[in-house]
Image 1 (tube, one colour):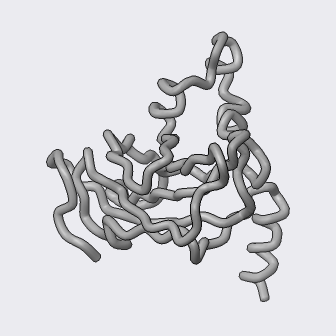
Image 2 (image 1 turned 135 degrees about the horizontal axis):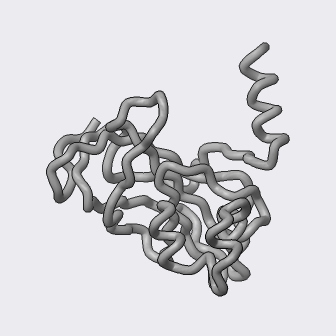
Length: 157
């Protein structure tokens, strides 16, 4: 019961998320060991909305349903005082990438400074509509272990 109530509080905070059976990450596999840069691939069982894109988020939660990616910069004082921010450079530095394809080369993964294992990271893929707003609560989620040496996937699962 505690778990259910905790999930509903999480969703009520505007951070709703559920695994999407229509977008599936195929590479790397869950908990694979990878080296940056590496290629993230997924399969979509329905087409993007007209003008839509996929948003890839590395080590961060997506914006709430109906919100645009610029919502992720709220509270960033440096961005708030910089004209044109957030821009592609800000997004990339904060682990946010946009694409229309079903694969993306993740160029780097920033170190994590928290209680989790320093090698455990995550990637989330959500769908954006033609106006750049997040479509629903659904997305695909993957955890992976990052190792120090560069270039590619070392092992799956």
